[in-house]
Length: 477
Image (cartoon, rainbow, N blue to C red; front, side, top):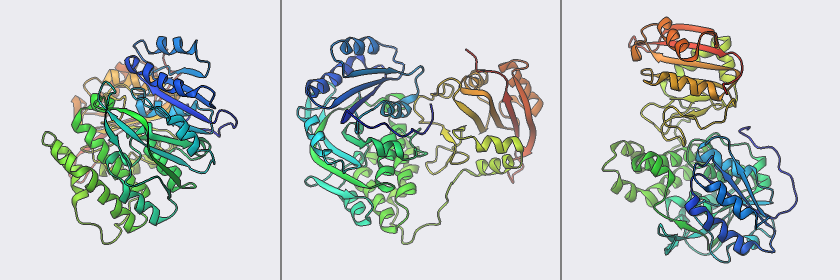
């Protein structure tokens, strides 16, 4: 599947409610039921996108389909991670507007009618509602009011409205962080290029919303009424990565939002920094006693406001990645690697710094906190990636054969694979030794060597081993 979506077809239905899911058979029946109970006689379709669930999700949804023709079921061949499955769910929509509902959430009575009324004139690029705060049993405990004040319109083409929006935000989720409260104009969603941070941040909808609002027509319609029931204490990302990493993901999202959408003007940059301080500082500080690394990400938001726009790095990489990119640009095969749209760059961060980027804007950075990635497993379908850059690594992974086999699985036929590791790391003291390890893992004759070198990597005399391979034949079955 392409990382960008083609133009969408027009026509009925008016609203597509898309439910991405993975192993949520115990919850998804309630989510679907809450929608179907309100959809009768309305121009609404329901689409479930199953991320290769291993539980009874498929059987449950198919049993509901037998009674509800407006319900569709789509299943991914492999688990793509939550970010890609959210985008995949949206790609199956056919309505004028799409509403992405978490599979463990539900919608309250009257929510569909409220949304249909809000989109009746086709004007808003994005509609945002509030949510009912619920416990794990989905019993209401309060209201999540994302923006202070009554229903309102915000024109993001105007700096004053962007600032007004930031001042109205009441919590971190106000920056489009709660998926189930967001409704998007589908034609605009499809027309906007996919933001480079839509995959791998845990917040694809945030960057889709910001693209549509900041780079498109820019109208946000806030309903100031609950349109979702939020099942709390059931965060898949916290379960996957742990609480400390989950908080770091939130901070990283805010940092990327500043760089990408709020750094053109000083007032906007400082406005978003104030938003983070106001909405999240106390919570983050109280929860980070067990996670000192999070403080490194948080502290910048508590520094004094900028008095001038900082010098902007269009693509800030770690020094090691910058040097590697320069070396690759001097090789014909390296230029091919860098030019590959959708290149996977695995292990591009130093100490998980939020400001660091993969090797270039065409690349998808895969590192700690990337949903579906556990250090070996890559959440991408077989044969779909044109190239992979692995490193620079301080040492070879202990499970190198498994890592290489996973790379081969997702690479397209004749895909490029670059491996860069510190000299001596993991017991590989030479290019020949590293090449032998790769050949032992992938098999003799499975690749063609394009480049092998031992190069000086830094001013301290450290060295790295570089291998650049092209895989032969198709991906393994």
